[in-house]
Length: 122
Image (cartoon, rainbow, N blue to C red):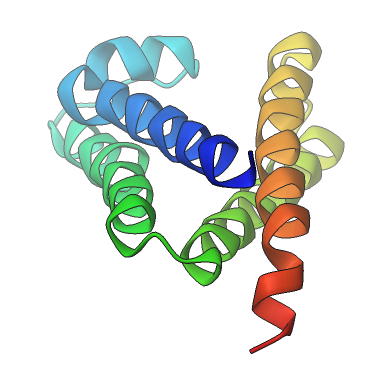
């Protein structure tokens, strides 16, 4: 069951990354970001919100090890810390920021806790 849920989390990660990679204008809109005078913002979305997450999820699936899924959880934990600190410091739209926080925290929690036993045994 853990293996199936790990793969589901990786597929979700790939799917979310595909939005940033293949639909950066939609992603910018969904994240309340504005594009500027250049298209560098779209480049950043494709890279950091897109392909980074596609590679993270695909890499975990290809490696198929608890450590790979654990590290994907660590990446989500980092996103959770960033999102939480933004919620406290930046006054973003509450519903949106806490929804994204909850999704990232759930993925982080699952991936870290479910794979911790196998990782800590190394």
